[in-house]
Length: 447
Image (cartoon, rainbow, N blue to C red):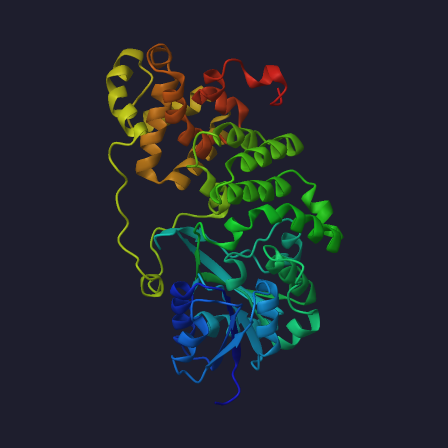
């Protein structure tokens, strides 16, 4: 085989069902000469033998006798890379067939130190959840000092192999944040190139490293801040550090550590004066339906039409199922139409939105921004259902007839999607009223 243009490195450990699909996606890349290096980090499920049986001359397998960690596995693959460019792929993610070709072309045109694309996030059922856009190439180094803004984890970036060697590859003292650290160093080494179209499908599921190792995140962030002093300054600004801690708590929750997640939410609320974190701390003992938003969906945009390559790249995808018709908010909304006739609190269509804007006690333009955000997060049908349930549950008749826990469950979806950082909005939708006393009186929210 002639010298490859791109070397692709996949680390894996006991996940044959996943890595087999990732390997197929790499070997199906179009118009690019590549080699694929799979680093088997001590698997006991026959991964190395199964890969060898594929018989593709572009595929090499490196095996660790015992697990050495994902950063070490990637570095060992990088050490063996013969291509002018190196790309990394996690074993649970997928690529568009022209991912490498288009990223290499963009990087070469810009003389870039790294190239990256937008990503599609898919859930555990391989259904698309939204689009994670690629940040602008200009100012990427500064943006990375606030948060890891390159979507798709380690499965997105390509970089010159020689530069990766010069920078020392991945820091093996890190695991969850090893990609963030390397992207910072790459972005400081030269210009970046962005492909706006999505080339990566990022699988968000409960067995991912970011979920299972969420407890490591605060310590790794502290180490990263020591390594990059500018990160300390940026992370002290409101919003950036809170974003990271919300993401950490979501991972703890999804890994089954509910009370540890609640404590992380509370610490975030106190440190960053974040009403959104306080809301999540209040909700965490009772429901997990908002956790996914903190884990992955904060930056997502609605995906009106999945890219054509996605269905073929992701195994087991099926048409999206309609949500069950008789969920609690829907029941409350349907039953509430009669209640609405008595109280006059609900109007159809745009009248409902105008009522919400008026009752929020906010400037109409600001309130409309929040409404648009909620609609984008929930989708039109879920938005209408949850908004209606919230209005009904918050009115005077419902307060007399319905138990507080029923109203809380009805109110929470809309409160989180619409007003997670607005104390007066939370009061409107009823969360503060459901509590025994307003949170402001206990010094928990700013007046």
